[in-house]
Amino acid sequence: MRSNHQIIQEHYAASDRKDVAAMMADVAEDVRWTEAAGFPCAGTHIGPAQVIDKVFKVLGSEWEGYQFKLEALFDAGEVQVGIGTYSGRYRQTGKAMQARVAHVWRLEGGKVRAFEQFTDTLLVAQAMR
Image 1: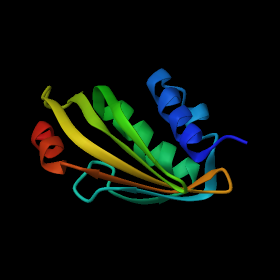
Image 2: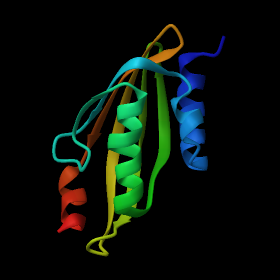
Image 3: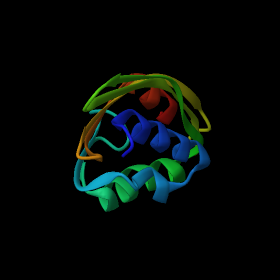
Image 4: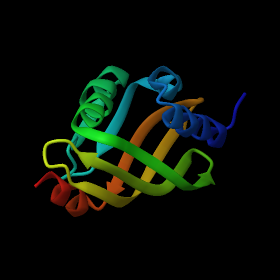
């Protein structure tokens, strides 16, 4: 059985490849996926379908070259913390952004049960104006 750390490493590797199916492979059917207040996809989304529709598809359509660059992944057993940087160009304004971000993952039984994003939403909002 893969460790929780390996599961999240594989999620980020799939994200780099833009492989949504692989990104969601270890996500529980009732996952609680929370994007920070003030972020374009703010709120808590329940289940993989909502995460794909209300987060990944929105970011992919509204931002050009949107990406997350992982810099460190910390292993705390059932909790994993990814630290990195978001970047991209907002299509409507043509403005680019870079924002530091932390992702907090909670896993149980080899499945992602919860995800929470912490980021500088002001930097994102400035690109959208």
